[in-house]
Image (cartoon, rainbow, N blue to C red; front, side, top):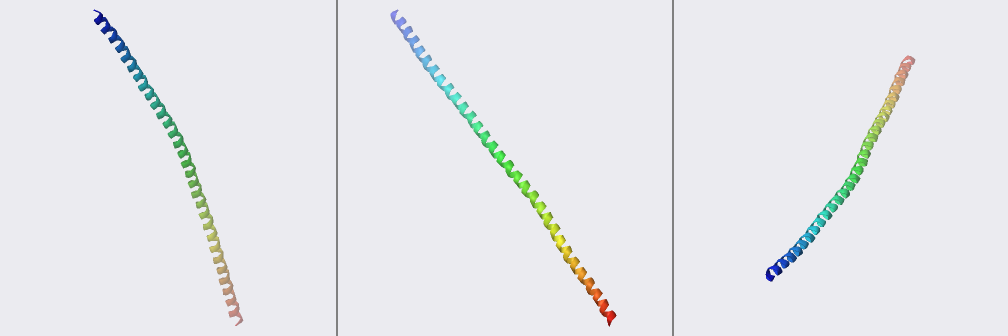
Length: 112
């Protein structure tokens, strides 16, 4: 009878010890999971910050490219106008010189 009582007492003590160990282990596992979830959340936050920085940098670069292209088109248009004006001025000088030469030839023919 006493042996039965002792066995029961020992069984309860060992069950409590196993239950206590199990709950300690369960708490540690939950703690690790919570820690892993917090680490993952912080990593996503940092990645979002980096992605935002990359996005902002890309947006600035793209804006600079568009500005450069716009300025290059304007410069090409200005250079084209300048070239056309210079070409027209040279043609006008040639046309004026040819006309004057023609008039001088007429005068020379009249004189002869």
